Image (cartoon, rainbow, N blue to C red):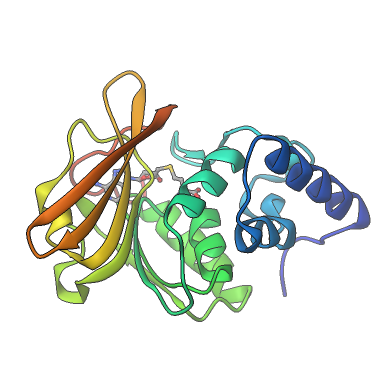
Length: 219
Ligand code: SAH
């Protein structure tokens, strides 16, 4: 049993959120449908039940954040997810982005360095019957070499530079999306167009929590 209900009020607020995202320029129908379907308040503390449908980032546990819905939608759109794409996410956080990728048809491998978040996201998404998401508790800075290559890679925490090791884990034709920078981050996509050719594009400024080394366990 899920611990929360998805009421008419939540559904109504979610429809408005989708309208907001369309106004802000999101066009990919798959992404809009996924956001329209997924109860974002399930991923948040009950105190944030109705704020869940405002287009803003919100706090989750251990000082981390669930990304702004626009950011989730924009990053997912830029990844051009196709059915059965094998997608690596670094930074599971609440699990919301992983669920959106799964709803778009991807097989998701998601990695989190905070043990509490890893357990909570995993428990929630298993209860919600997301069977095509695999969860890993570890430092994601080396990617997931034993499951590489991936069709898409999404990094949902701020990196100071593009980790070369991740580019090597992309299939030819694959895309990585990653926010790069210190105080604010430039959203960057890199497409691997051949074994050793990569095409980089910039997509504007965003703000993410930092990508950190090592793991942190329950205190
Ligand atoms: N995608 C998330 C947003 C999470 S915020 C969501 O939909 O809710 C970024 C997350 O990246 C945090 O949970 C943080 O703990 C995690 N993170 C930071 N550095 C990491 C690393 N080296 N490996 C794995 N996860 C990391």
